[in-house]
Each structure stands twice: as structure tokens, then as C-alpha cells.
Image (spheres, one colour):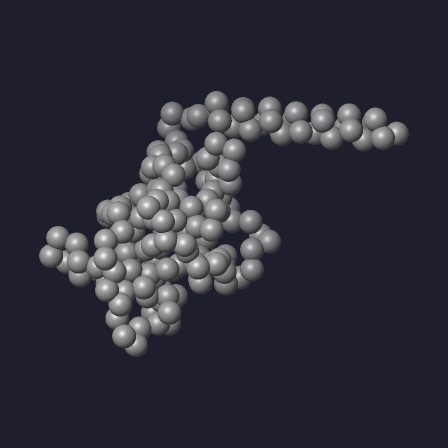
Length: 173
């Protein structure tokens, strides 16, 4: 009996691997491509649409702004421009980001706003077929689901695609 259970689970895992391999190797040449900037926050993989990300910067000195909300880390000077820098961890229910040499700031635009977003690390920038992006998981709570536009895989990791416009809209409330 126990041998049957192990055998059945092995068969299920093998089938999942075959399906994933088939999904990766079957690409419709007519399928539109989407550029994604894949990054980590608290060890989880997330992505922004590449069209929303204007620059990726190493972390310069961040100047605190007295009286600003907790999610605003401060402002930076970038080639004559002053950009705010936000921490999106709180919006996603993730712990505060530890500062390391891997940290980057993605300067992004969406929903009529522009800001820098502190990231743990950039993993990759890829072009992905639009069909590889699946709808958000229905198990997400409503407040997080509003920030998520889809899910995909990158290697063996699940990647959650975030909506810059909705994140910035949440800041304005």
C-alpha cells in the first residue's frame, strides 16, 4: 500500500515535469513578447513589466524626508532629478528589506506617478511570451490581488508580476 502511494506520487511529479517542459518548449511565434524585470523581495520572486521600469540603479545615498509615510524611504538625486524611493514590502506584507550590496532601485512610472522602488536584488530581465503569464492565484487576499497582474515561472521559481500603477495608486490613498 505504501509502495503504491510512493509510486503514484512519483508518477504525478513526472507528469508535472513533462507538462512544464512541454510548456517551455512550445512557443507560438505569433505570441507577443513581454519584457519583465525579475527581482527578489524577502527571498520571493516578483517582476515588473519592463515598459514601466525606466532605470535600474545601484543604491546611492538616500536622504530622509521628515514627516513622510513609513513606506517612503526618502529621496535620491539622479542626474539632476530628485526621485522618491519607496519600500513596497509593507504593501505586500513582507518584512523590511535588509540593506546589502545587491540592493537596487528600480525607477518606475505608472498610474501618472514616478518613483524609485527599493529591491532586494535584480535576478534577470527577460522577454517572455505573453501566454506564459497566468492569472493571479485565486487564493491571494483581495488587498494583495489588486497589486498582482499575473504569475509565471522563471527557471524553477514562481514569479509574481506586480502592477506598478496599482502600487502607486495605493500610495496616493
